[in-house]
Amino acid sequence: MFLVRILFCLFAEDTGIFSRHQVTRYILKRTNEDGSDLDMHLSKLFQVLDTPEETRNKNLPEILEAFPYVNGALFSERFDMPSFSSNMREQLLECAYFDWGGISPAIFGSLFQSVMDQQTRRSLGAHYTSEKHIYRLISPLFLDELKKEFGKIKKLKRGKQQRLITFQQKLTDLQFLDPACGCGNFLITTYKAIRELELQVLKEQHKDDTHLGATLTIEPLISLDHFHGIEIAEWPARIAEVAMWLRSIR
Image 1 (cartoon, rainbow, N blue to C red):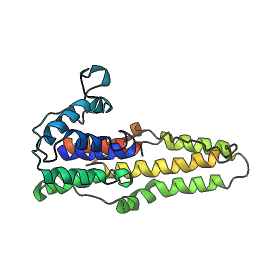
Image 2: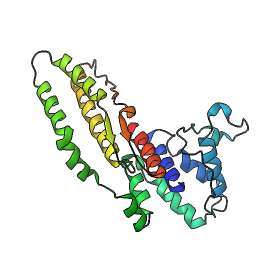
Image 3: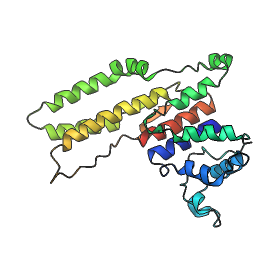
Image 4: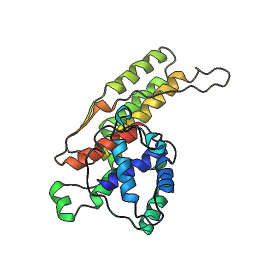
């Protein structure tokens, strides 16, 4: 749980949920170099992230008050924090300096599975599937056909705009279910693939809607509510939920 929270924070400050390097600055400014008080400050940060802005203590330091509320119960559970040394603090900061913006949220599932013992993984059927192998399934299952349909629409001489609108609506109406989703890698990859296809459709639909060099802002409409998973264990399901949320803002 601690590692998932830390990973979320590292993603959040590099993908727009938090301000750029917001967590990193908090650690640098508020914690001792020897790491002796890092557990206390991280615990306070987690508590703040779990508290809506309007119900927070009015005496919070400004650096903590600036953090947004993170719903979804990721930070709701209280647990004993690990004690840090100066070396551990430096390793955490080194991780924070890395740009997580280009890393797939599927790393959550990989991390969770790597800390499970082999017998537990076998009993739960918890096995990491790479994005490459996921595409080997979803491409012939539905993605290739959707891309083929889009390719035909792009070549139309008449009625193209209406067909693009209809096709985009088709994409936003699709529902996906993984009946044994684990940490959500199949759902994450499928969401990414469908959203990228919708973005291509929107760009094709509006490619002539620019004036005087202005850039058109296009927001995909694919909804996370259309992606469903069933999982027997609580924590993989929670990780899948967080990873899907992170993928949706990318």
